[in-house]
Image (cartoon, one colour):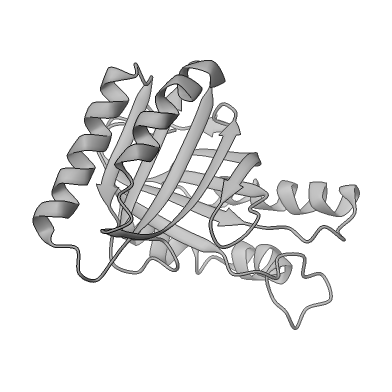
Length: 213
C-alpha cells in the first residue's frame, strides 16, 4: 500500500467555511482518484506541531497517487493554508487487534532520525518503538514506516502510526507508560547520550471512524 499523510496548518485568517470547503474537497478528490482509504479530519486538542487538519490517503500503488497528486496539491490554497508537513511511504500494518471498526483515535508521529545514527542504532530504535503495543491494550493497530518523500519543517525519516480505542488511551497509558519513558523517550531526550531524534517532531491525532491503518 502507498500512503500519504499531510498535516495542514491554517492561516489565522482562514474562516470556518474555507476550512470545511477544503476538507470536503480533499475527500472528494480522494474518492475521484480511487483511494483505497482516506481520513480527513480536524486534529484534536493536544497535538504538538500536528497541524489543524489531518489528511491521510492510501492508494493501491504509487502510480495511482501520482495521478491524483496534482489535483490534491492544487487544493492546498496558500491563502488559507500556512504550512504543510507531509510524508509519503509504503507499508502494511505491523499488527492489529480486533476488527478495527469501533471508532477511536488515529495518531501519527513524524520524526527525523539523525543522519549520523548507525544502521544498527536505527534498527534498535525501531524495535523499541514496536514494543509499545505489547504493553498498551488501548492500541489496536500500528505501523512503523520509513519515509520515501518528506515535505515541511524537517526531512522526516519515519512515520509511527497507531489506532487507539480512545483519546485517554493515547494521552494516558501510552505516553505515560513506564516502557515509554524508560526505553522510547531516551531516543528523543537531548540530555541522554542515546538521543538520535534532535529535530522537532509532529505529534498529531484526530477522531476515527472505522480504520485508518
